[in-house]
Amino acid sequence: MDGTFSLILLLLFLWSLCSQRLARVELTAPVAFVLLGLLLSEGVGVLDLAPSPETVRTLAEVTLTWVLFTDAARLSFRALRPELGLYGRLLLLGLPMCIGLGTLLAIGLLPGVSGWAALYVAAALAPTDAALGATMMVDPAVPARIRRLINVESGLNDGIATPFVVLALAGVAAAGSTSDTHGSGGALVELAIGLIYGVVLGLVAGWLLRFALRRGWATEDVAGTGVLALALLSYLSSLAIGGNGFVAAFAAGLAFGSTHGAPQGVLLFVEQTGSLFSMLVWLLFGAVLVPAAFEHFTWQAVLYAVLSLTVVRMVPVALSLAGSGLDKRTVLFVGWFGPRGLASVIFGLLAVEELAPSAWHSIAPVVACTVLLSVLAHGITSAPLAQRYGKASAVTGVPPAGPAENELPIRGMGAGAVRARRRGGRDGRA
Image 1 (cartoon, rainbow, N blue to C red):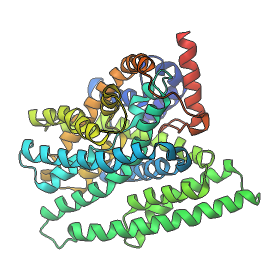
Image 2 (image 1 turned 90 degrees about the vertical axis):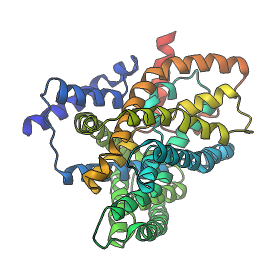
Image 3 (image 1 turned 90 degrees about the horizontal axis):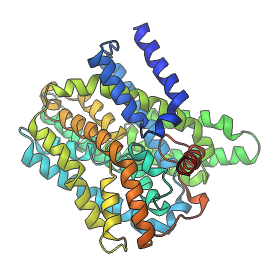
Image 4 (image 1 turned 30 degrees about the horizontal axis):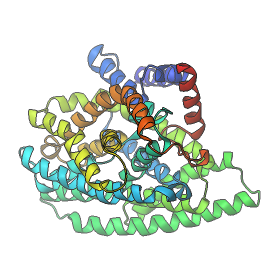
């Protein structure tokens, strides 16, 4: 076991040394760690990962908590206001349509899948992850308005999809249990408690931090550790009072970010820690979840994965953006760059740990297949499609970049890293 941990730590250190260089050949962290997990576990057999269910669950819960809190808190509502209509279209119209269409497809295509299980599959695969298209997200050829649209959608849709996932898992667990269980009704109560508690906690914590910074009682560098603890506090304390921890973390992040006003500085430590845990999740996905899911892959799972990344994603996006003023090429570009990533992986890990084998054998392979296909497809197409769309948008006149202060950090990349990547990209093409 010590050797396995040493190898993982070595991989993380080596990645930190050459991540910028590897990014120039379009090798992002998710792609790299999924492939490393597969290669070292199934290929050469030197990575022997057999984590206990408690370890997997803890890693998934902690990572999702930090991701939900940070994604919500790092968004500046002042920066979002000019394009609020577009964000609302994607999140309030496109996302529910995506979940609904995905549910209907799962019921009709996947054998032995109940309504609750179909809802879980659709909701787990609805969130997008801009990090899988990081090359496109830092390419100055793509108008900043479009990059920002994709980035904001990615930052908020995992939190909005979480209640659907929680309800669906509760429904599946209740349907397959002979014991007394609170089911979906109890889950709704937990969601409401988590939402209210998270908002109150985030508002109070944001006000206290702003007060401490203005009085000189704290500095942003040190306050980052406190915000890291706050994210976990929102999750654990919500569970203690009967609420849903994930919803509480997302709501607390939204409230904290809106109160503090400019959270990027104090969120840097949380983002970096979350990135570390995210890479561990991707490694676990490649080394454990993908091989286990391969044993239960069916042609229906593969077909659902293909349709999920195309029809189920792109049709709702096109419908939600109809009449928005965006041209057809831009709508197709936004629709395609809806990669399934970290949130879907974590939802899959939670399903494996919470459901009986008979339940997750039919749904976890669909999640694993879709995410794996997305990692490869979006990783390969990110750079060439960004360049092609960028050239076309320069001709058709898609609105140019907005003010620099409106730039939002991509998940796993701070604002400074984003600017560095863009400078490096321009230098490399010069």
